[in-house]
Image (cartoon, rainbow, N blue to C red):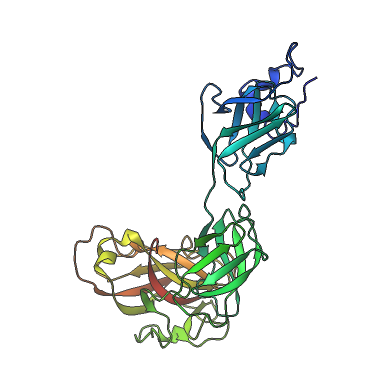
Length: 379
């Protein structure tokens, strides 16, 4: 009787190609011999032929004397034989989702009759970082950095480090879509953040900058002070919540404090010289800032604009959200929501303005803002 391994992971695909209707016993007259591979195909196109595939793809190995397989490898990655379906002339299996230590671009099949190889390239996704939970995480605190294929690259505390510029710090923990590390105490601002896998000798760079200083509108501190008289009552060296650094906007509203409502008012406005590219191509940029809030907003609207002659559109809860209440988080708003598309002017001296509407009976709000800056996508 021929050997049939576990089909629980490929049953749906085998049904699609009517594999389960095939007999389970080896045909009469089939004898052992030296294995041969004649082609590789996608399992959904058995008549076709492929020479490359992605991790996780379902494929078929075509040839002869393929029954009673003892081992299959893609590069140096061994396939779990409990996850294949084999006949004498074809084997159905999934390309392993595991990185090789040695890349040979070959498939190796071993049976009692010998070993056969076949040229085949497995495409591996790149290790990727997608962003920081809080780009202004204070030095010495832990930072969460998001990414892709972290488990695939076996990122953990024993074989990976995070670089803040030229300073390395170990990975504390990792999941499939994020890592945690401690920001070095002597870190410099405005540096790139990278993740290095020592096991596979690859580096992924995070978009953005740690404590970005590229196009800062205000940090409310001495490096980029907030000097406008508007909204000064909201700006201060507040201690609750703990600041990312120095001063920030503390915007708290409740019915007891404002029984007649606030109507519309300016939370802040600050002069700023944009670049011509920002004015003419705002779709290439985002407004970034750190936001801390204790509860979601529902009826409160923000109007953010670069000068009043262009009527702004209200921005509400769709933009002002955080993953965890009570923690600072980096938030982005597309710049085209602030500067309209289609500008041809070369004027760049304008401002950034936050106007807020919160009418009676006022909605309770507790929101804190810091480090307003413009980020060019892809940097």
